[in-house]
Image (cartoon, rainbow, N blue to C red; front, side, top):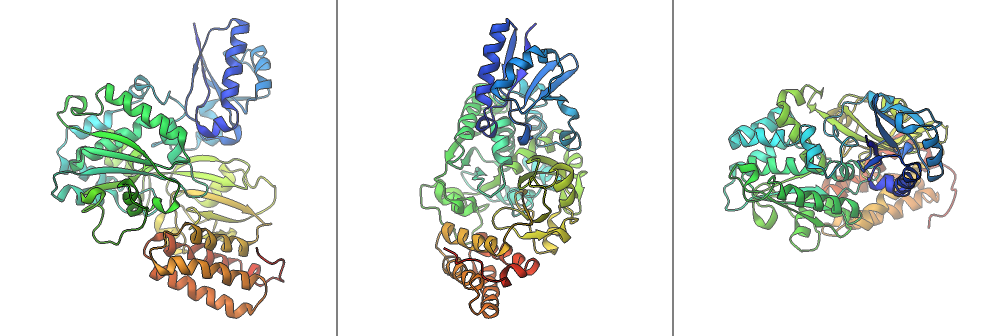
Length: 517
């Protein structure tokens, strides 16, 4: 009987040598005359253990990692095909503490199935949500999303049901569903993990959205830096269409939905929904004035549902298990689960899916294992390059949209980047302004000019030139950008700067260390 061995095809695992390990295992199995079947799964998200190899045994799946090419002969000698002990032995995969304590809803299949196997997807409850949606009328389907409490996971946290209902209630000869997969925030990779590790859940979620609002076409806008995601999605769409899950007659329902992948051109601003729509239309990615809202006049001027990957990938489980099941996770107005991405100076960087309410301290220490350097964690940035820097005194804040808003921060896309006590927070504030200056589309003055002036003012501060006067000027400039920018890029760049000034003032008032280039 053939032994199934799982080796991730996720691009992060590939960057750590997964392809070479897969080849080495194939060669060694042939030499030993062992009958194996290689399954290229998605990563489970334990990136400090990649490449992580799993073997299907009578006791369940047993994990080993991180596996290097030179480890392969010894693994065979240790009888790892039957779960034998080895220095890299991690035990049953589902009992690894990092995984065991999670609540995986959106990521339920990632790392378990072959991402491109429709049979695997069906065997793990795939398409059940779509079948349930097709049995409802449009209003009931939209109500299901509303009742679940699902909010946009891309950062804005806008209730998905309200957006969908607006598209449903707007009459048009054509409607669209657009997936924002332009994942460009620092420390984020959950969208990529879904696209590469479970593409059918995104396809299913987008098809449900189309069924619910009356849209017949969908587009997945993927950042150009994600070639593996583009490839996997394109293959999955072709296979889903051939199997009847996409096309003019979705699983015999008489409903049509077509889907295609579009590649971005590397502009951070195209993560903003209206800039993304401009880019999809073949124009330069620049922010649109609102109103009209994209839900009323979006892609090509037609009503458009635009949500990010995690939002749409959360939809199938809501329809398969019911709105109440999903709503039972979380706290306050933050319902369901959030895939949290741990990055930066941590021992255990990886993906953690938890219900809202988990604290930063739990994430940093119970899951992240503390700093990789062994030094105290001084600050964390949550929500990408526009997120606030939070000090240790805020680490007990629960992950909740309103709780973070109350302390001047944001949950955003769920990316957490940790810094130890060697970090220079004045330099980090400067980086935020410089990032905005580079990535601004240039349409509005507060963002285009404010960010450039912000870099200059911070340089004056760290050089010790009229320090107090320039700190006051920086705070005033942040206020102007916050209240006068056209979109979130300029409007949120003040968050990291203001938080650095508030929580780490001594870094701005220290003796001049250097002249900033």
